[in-house]
Amino acid sequence: MAEEKYTLEFEKPLQEMSRILADMQAQSANTEVDVSSELEMIETKIENTKEKVYSNLSAWNRVQIARHPNRPYSLDYISRIFLHFQELHGDRLFADDHSIICGTADFEGEPVMVVAQQKGRSTKENIYRNFGCPNPEGYRKAIRVMRLAGRFGLPIIALIDTPGAYPGVGSEERHVAEAIAVNIRDMFMVDVPIIAVIIGEGGSGGALGIAVADRVLALENAYYSVISPEGCAAILWKDRAQAPSAADALCLSPEQLLKFGIVEEIIKEPLGGAHNDYDQTASAIKKALHSHLGDLKKFSKKELLDGRYKRFRRLGVWGDKATKE
Image (cartoon, rainbow, N blue to C red; front, side, top):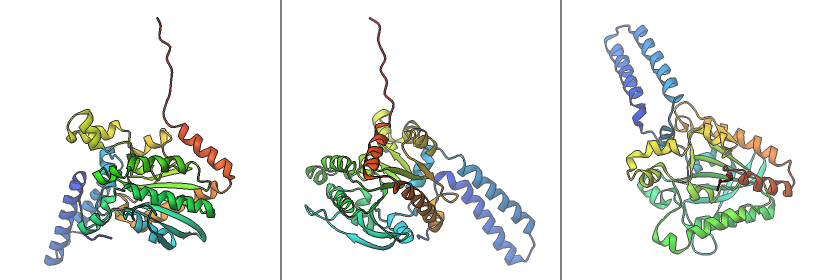
């Protein structure tokens, strides 16, 4: 876990109070003056402020937490949730995309296939992982191992964390849109349980390319959207500074994701975000996976495929309105 403390803009009042508390503790230790009552008052104020701040987060605040540089990434969860992870490489067509990692693992004594998007922390890691933005070969690798999972009857667990598919020239030349479209089509035909968990950013087709699942779960401070708030603001307002307004318009809050049936469950995070306790967050994800995988194993292959199709057909609102001549 990264040691450096990174503070978001809306967290700065808390940072200032914590600084005052630390200064008073140091002063008390140096002067041997008893200020325990004052320290207790400040600690209580900090806790009350934390509750107030983190229980009233805006959609944009949650986007900021989802992008927190210390937030746990897929490999952090894989090491805590699964055993014996064995990575599989390459799409057998072009190359191995390092922003998508795939492999077999053990989940509570049962073999599963894990497909995950991975970001990097340092500049070197981010270049290696392409900042979590998959190229078409990443999606082709993902669907290759998903078909393999279907052949051997392995449930599929997808961990989603990407700002979007890579929009570079090479990616477009190798048909990234076609690769995502094939994944969306073929995931409807993989006849094993599929659970997708949005652990950070769930950006547009970049996320959906591995998220056609029987159950879609999301961490409390993750987001899932057809476009990034900045991209939406640039289109609607011609100004990326309007990203907070765009986040509200895109209905990114966990309550709205549940209301519209976009996800089946919101997984609680530690107060302040998953970066404050990797183990607690991993434990919550593991508990949710256990519950949903247990439910899905009760269905036949036909029931799984029918239910998956119906799940996505329900999304959105359609209506016809007759017009008078």
